[in-house]
Image 1 (cartoon, rainbow, N blue to C red):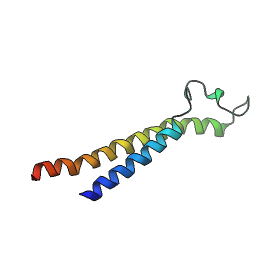
Image 2 (tube, rainbow, N blue to C red):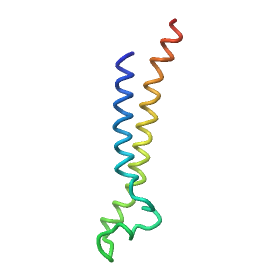
Image 3 (spheres, rainbow, N blue to C red):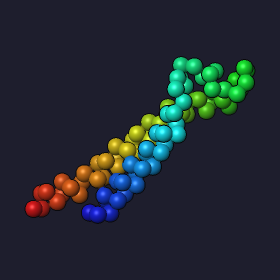
Amino acid sequence: MQTLYLIGQFLDIIGAIVIFWFSSIPGLNKLPGAWMSSGNPTKKEFQRAKWYPRISAFGLSLVIIGFVLQIIPTVAKMWVN
């Protein structure tokens, strides 16, 4: 059970890092031109802009899964006692 708790904490940390790195650009979906390097955005830059919300949602999923994995040993311990 301790292993589930540690895996949950690890996923929480990784998820928080992913959320930090991929959601730190404000208004990415609304104003993609604000963060692009040139006045003429390339196709690669637009594809990159599409991935930011997806990766950020993946980070949030990691945090939620990690939280659930941390709760399982606690609830199991309460049921056993």
